[in-house]
Image (cartoon, rainbow, N blue to C red; front, side, top):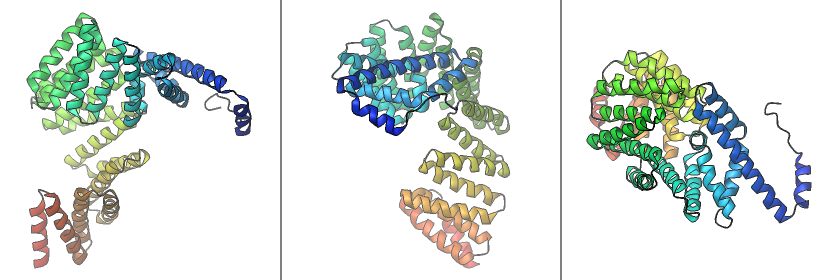
Length: 421
């Protein structure tokens, strides 16, 4: 009743499979792939309409996610031997590019996009080849590999210029602008965003206008011009709201919050961070929920609002475990313990530091282990256990020397004071 779908009993499925010929099985899989490619495209169409349709698109995509994945996998597995499957493989990557990015893990996305790129080249489909190059560039950008990202974006830009794909050209100029901005090349970034904005206005594409304006904000922020950044982000935000583009609205909300914090206006930034979190939850976008919770918790700590920080860190740890993201989990455990310690609650702080120490050792994360050991020493001292506090601080000091942690002198000074006492 939850999905309004029927299912076969396992024995019936086995009975039927035993009687299907190899050719029939192939035809069935192809029909399945085509049908669910259409469903994916329908969901993406609703998503791109924005507003109330966006949530409908996400819901439809989530309902059929297992079927869509199965169709995409079949197409990619047969793309080299079957021209139709190759076409489907390429089309799947286009059918729901935004929704795939929301729901598919990065390692899965890159597998399918590489398969789609090979298929497009085999079919000599230059437009599709360009789009898949752009998607691969976005993957490398998101995984902090800027040189690879630039290479893929420039390849797509060359194709877009060649085939007069103005939309693709503006998109790639925006993407290149974001990479240049992250690399500190502000002038090149602004030039790319300005060129993209000119094209976007010429073709009346509001979504791209929002991206280019927000990109200018990002470039200004990276250059330390935070008020100019906020002005650009707000223009981008206004367009995103106008077209009902919730993901972009959330992104610009977060960006404004970050710039406000940089200007020392943290209390005002809270409103923007909270809206970013609300949108991520509405979209069931757990990756952005993680970012939003992290930003909010740190800001509450900076504002000495420790009880708020404690609550949010609890949500953050729960989410990292749900996502099986242990590197983020160990950082959150350590920070959660610090929040308890700052609120003069050393007992729960010590329990969290103990979990952080155990997990950091399991992960081989020496830096976080050192931080957790030192934090544990401070909590133990507050609990009156000076001897154990010294033992933990000494262990932290050994790691700090190994990883060249800047706070090493702080640990030395604390140990000297405790030994004198």
